[in-house]
Image (tube, rainbow, N blue to C red; front, side, top):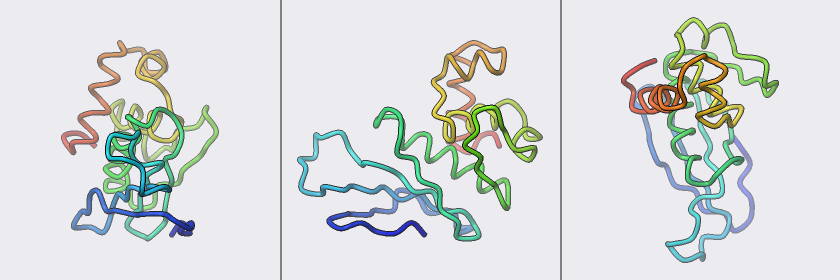
Length: 138
């Protein structure tokens, strides 16, 4: 698990039956409710390994964390690689929606960057990530 920092508030956003969970982390819990929102999200997989999502636009962090959680549910031991030219074989085998979710969640790709990488429109790339996040596609 990721070490808790001083003055940090953690709240479980999503908990799945298989043990995968998404935790929202706010470093300054005294911020007003209209502030940017959580500073980062932690995705904990079935084995207890934790992955932080703390980069990119704050408004997309929860979406990316939920998509990564869904990938963790489909792949027992998902290994995160920060090299932008790398997508694990287990993810690639699930198809373009899973690849789009991985690129968005792990490499912080924007929809148009993901679309370019997958040779689809940015709208299709965005929809892929949404479907994975919602559990409609692996």
